[in-house]
Image (cartoon, rainbow, N blue to C red; front, side):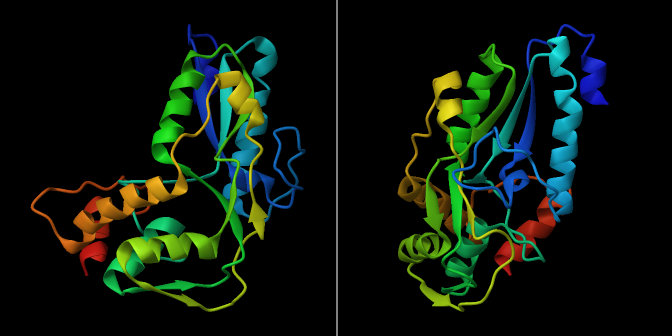
Length: 232
C-alpha cells in the first residue's frame, strides 16, 4: 500500500529489502532470473508476495529497486536466544559467554555479507537509474563450520560439532554479478575482518563496558530485554 501511494508522488528512488530465502530450492548460484517457487517458510512467502505486488508497478516507470539480501552481519546486530536465532550473533554470544559454540550441521553453506558493504550498496542503489531486482551478498559460499571456527579463534572458545540435521536449505549462495555491474559495487570486507569487528563489538556488549552499547531494535524484542539476555 505504501509503495502504491508513492506511485503518484515525485519519488526519485524506492528500495524494497527482500531476502535470499525467496530462492530456497533453486539451483546455484542463485540468479535474479530464477522463478520463485512456493516456499514453505511464511517469511519467504511474505517476501515473494511483496515482490510480485511491487513488480506490478514497474511497467508504470515507478523507480523501484528490490534488493535480495543475503545473510548480513556486523556490530549492533542483536542476538536472540529463541526458536530462530541469528547465526553469527548466536555463535559469538556462545563463544563469549559459554566458551563453546554448538554447531548442528557444519556443512551447510551460506552467503554472508558485512553490514558496511550492505549500506554502501544501498546508497549506490538510491543513486542508480536501474529499476528491477538485484542480489546483495558476497557471492561466496562459506561452511557454517568454518564461520564457527573463525569466531572460536577470535573469542578463544571451543567448537562442538553435533552433526545434526539443521533447518533450511543445504546451500544458499548468490550470484552478485548483476549488482556489481549495475551499481559499480563489490563487497570489500573480508569475512575475517568483518567477524573481527563484530566479535570486538560483542565483547563490549556482553562482557561489560562503561560505554553504552546499543543493539538494533527488533519488532520481536525490546532492546533492554536483549541486553539482559546478553549479560546473563
